[in-house]
Length: 148
Image (cartoon, one colour):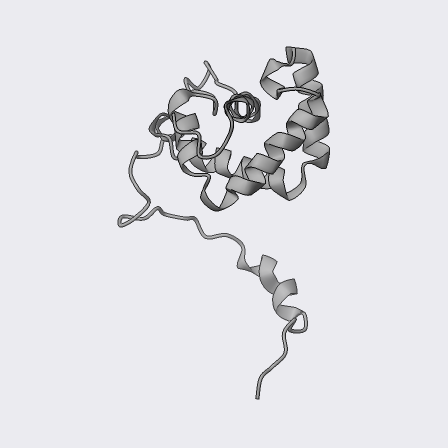
């Protein structure tokens, strides 16, 4: 497993937090986001979010007073709840990467009844919604300046 500039403690913390964000389910026969394959995908996918995620993990450890993965289960839940309230943009980046990687895992896609394949070139059918919901947006004044 490559660390992509995260320390071993940060990788352990990321695994523990990812498993709390999306735990494994025996009911749906899917792994949690802390699964080795999914975690490796997360680490490969940090890219532009790497600094935000490193900040989020440092903040998480600061709230807990030590490595998040080293906390007792009950205390870990409390620290995660505090982190959820104060995490901000760095937490949002972390959650986005976890969700992205989780929902592209073949096992998860199969459990959702989706064909395991890229979305293109076949595409996916999206049911039409109620376009009238956009009427208030269409009716408001433009939020931009017109250019001559």
